[in-house]
Image (cartoon, rainbow, N blue to C red; front, side, top):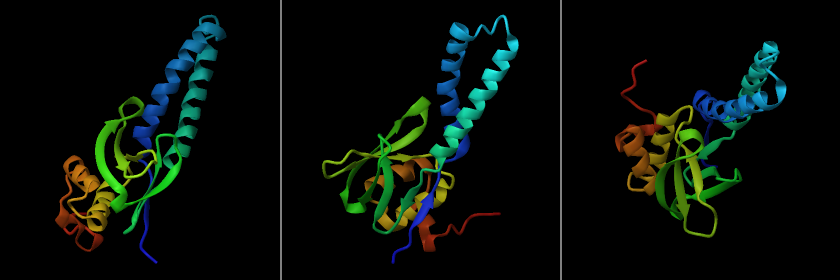
Length: 167
């Protein structure tokens, strides 16, 4: 059985995006319906609700795992559907931004499936890049873009561990 390593999203970039989407909607709704001018406590209650709801949505979002293995990537499409793509099926990789500017790598596949959306704000991005370099090779489209964006080099993947890290 091959080694598979899963990664989750970093919380705060995702939280900022979710909060950035929900807060303006809540403010407009409060202005139109809640009468927060006459009842300031409603504004405080609504703000606390929005912050808590954003945190809950972010926790769900950040638990969506990205898995890398010698065979390929298990990630999701723009619709949120998980899909597995073998390294040899990936034909191109393009950096892009999604919700409120969060960085993603759009990875095209050689079949009819939707491109994979690889988040570039994983909790341990350097380790993820090391594994991609080790499994796919430094010339692979995903490895090329990740190396440029994250700054890892093919030598960083020696034995699956970086040797130049200082604790």
